[in-house]
Image (cartoon, rainbow, N blue to C red; front, side, top):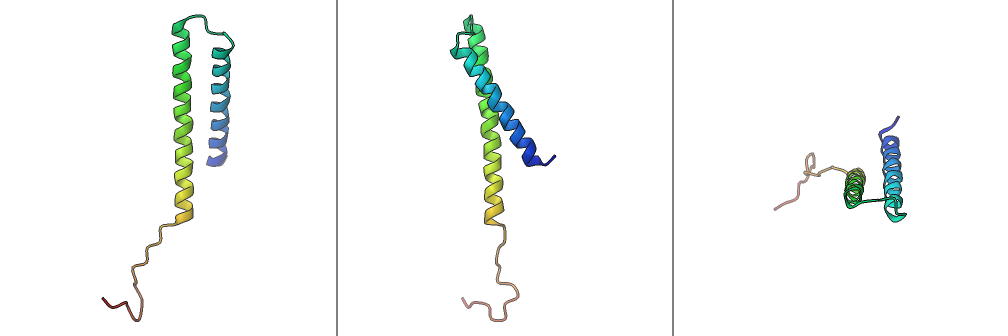
Length: 82
């Protein structure tokens, strides 16, 4: 399996879990404050992971588009004068 496919599946799983937890909180499935805080902590952690994956993908896209070629004027017959 390609790394992009793995990331896509992971993102989908994270999204599903966050949605399940959010529904649990909003539909009255929380019976005490301790459980509420636990679920909110899980949502925050999962959202943090989702954001980190998104940042890594964005960095990869930027690196792929901009390239890393640096022109040092080597091999020119007539180098620019100073």
